[in-house]
Length: 116
Image (tube, rainbow, N blue to C red; front, side, top):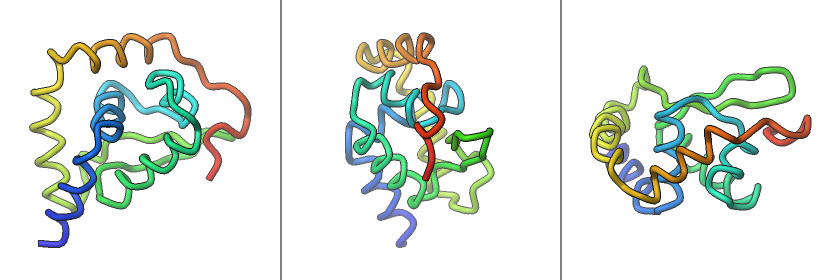
């Protein structure tokens, strides 16, 4: 039951849904999320942390960057199920489409943009 509540709370915020939308496209570092959503580093990091704690994300290091991706192999079946449903229902939204377009032009900047 706790996994369901944690996942539902994580998805109750527009910024976190927008972040998942990006991560369904490709893995990203914090600075790419910032650019695509036009938000601050602290806001991006905080919301990535919430999604990660709810079981939606996995991370890996690439040099100085921490890259976030949707964790399709998560032990949290609730998060995997929510992600599957979201993936098929987000494509038509205008805001989310614009976020994906900005993501195509985003770049990794600065060696510390994704450090934890």
